Length: 151
Image (cartoon, rainbow, N blue to C red; front, side):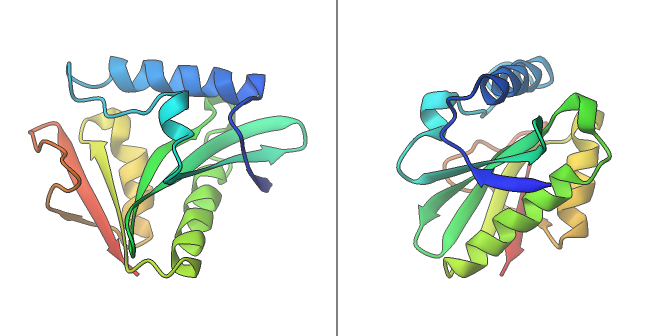
């Protein structure tokens, strides 16, 4: 597996982003899908990576700097054809490594709580993320939850 910084222009990445956007809206109550579009992922405070096995796109992930020392994981997605191959874990480990290298003291994320989100939640918790308070202007609800990792 190879993780690359990505400019979000490739067709495979765009297609998987479209799928991610669709799935987040399909599996979230109205107004509760905080998924970013391509332009949002290109913001100056955002870093975006894709993960590949040869010519096959396995997934992607993004890291947003909320403030100095604090980052938010955004838009983690494994391609449905490559689930269970370790791409999500590799991407999460990469993002955690980048956050540490940048001197972040904390990583946070917002996610859903329905069965669709359980595999991702299990991965985050395996890496030490713990449930906590809402952050960065997110609205807390019965649907979403907030995970934090102190680095």
